[in-house]
Image 1 (tube, rainbow, N blue to C red):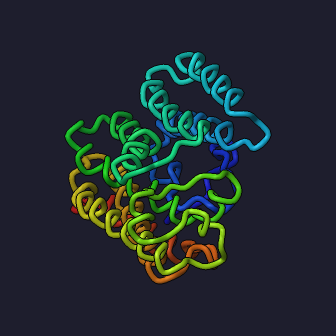
Image 2: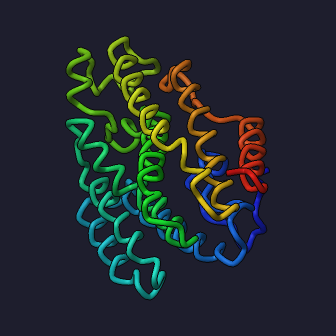
Length: 266
């Protein structure tokens, strides 16, 4: 089961209890936990800079440049994938617009895919597993954005939906600030969920292809949670209320992960 780590291993979160897909869990090998924690702390700190409402875009970009300059000293061999993340945070700082699904996918390739690649490399897994890990990470990013559509629009002025899809549905990005999806926006959200479903289908074989029991369990847990959240977003209006995973969901996902770590779990 997913359990809280001791305080010395804790990693900062934007808001307690809002993490859908925990990176640092009991399934992470103890010998690697400090490296995962360091990587995640860097990602969270950079994300906080990009989202800081008190800073101008130029200040955010300067701060991110400074963080990149110190990457090697802070993370050593893990700096490569952390550097890749900074491309997404720079786009956030500039207020990028995603005109097509391909644009949004390219953003996910910077904002989420490096995390999966970092974990695969950390555990010494084959690079060929990226074929399944990359779409899983992209799906997780989109699902998080679908959860936060209203907050991103109102609080940050961002729209993480393809603008061409919004136009085709006869919708208006400004309507993301409402307290309920318009019919057009519901079409766009469902279309994004369809695309996420395709990503998750491509990732379905990932857990059983991973050699490390701990990482295999982590992947199985994450995949289960992603499908659960996608189903919730399909049946519930994310503008009307916070669509979230329950404690029971995390317990069930943890059991799925534990089963995957057992002999024959592959």
